[in-house]
Length: 188
Image 1 (cartoon, rainbow, N blue to C red):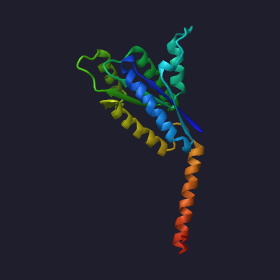
Image 2: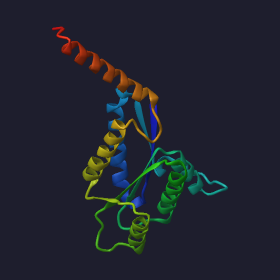
Image 3: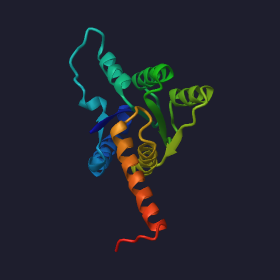
Image 4: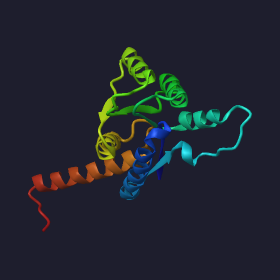
């Protein structure tokens, strides 16, 4: 079973979206069980609130660095901790080509904080195109397509021989069937 770690970063204002995202991730996880893929989602609500000598955020940053996929959500602002998590993900991506980073912005209200525009400008400077979403269904549809693309590519985040080998076996069986049909032998 291949475990794909996903870290979901967002401020408290998107609590509903995080909760619904978690439900959808585990539905996807159930549907991929027979493919040997387990999706593990980390969100800050699931992490310990105990005091740390290095600060609680340093514990979250450890999860970010261990993630295969990093999902960033924002609405009317980008909080300093969410931005710090993004920076750790970006630094790790630059050095290790992982985690893959996805950024999603909920259609903002009229009264957004400067931090939102500043963060979008930062993304523009590094030539990263973010994605907008209107509601949780829109967000999930977009991210679910990304998961399906990654699965089709064999999760290039981290080579997965067990998944690729099962695909190879399927391709080999398909070639045998084609060869038998071309030889005029048909089993009915």
